[in-house]
Length: 78
Image (cartoon, rainbow, N blue to C red):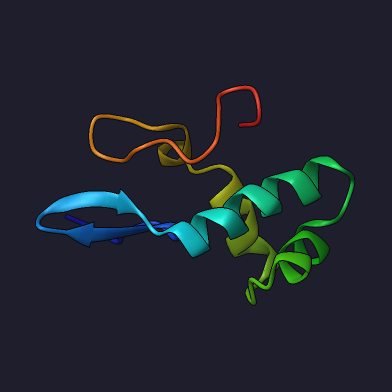
């Protein structure tokens, strides 16, 4: 398996939500949807990264849930 997306951790071979990181993911979507730039949205949530990485986070479909990853955000937010 590849890289575990930010907001999740693997426990006993299962993906589970990392509560603190998931809160940052939810805030990131909220900040971006409220009009902040990618970098500003990330900075406001305490995520220190480049704007390209923020874009990849926001485009990651795992956050709406799938057969392995539980949902962190809803489809409407995504």
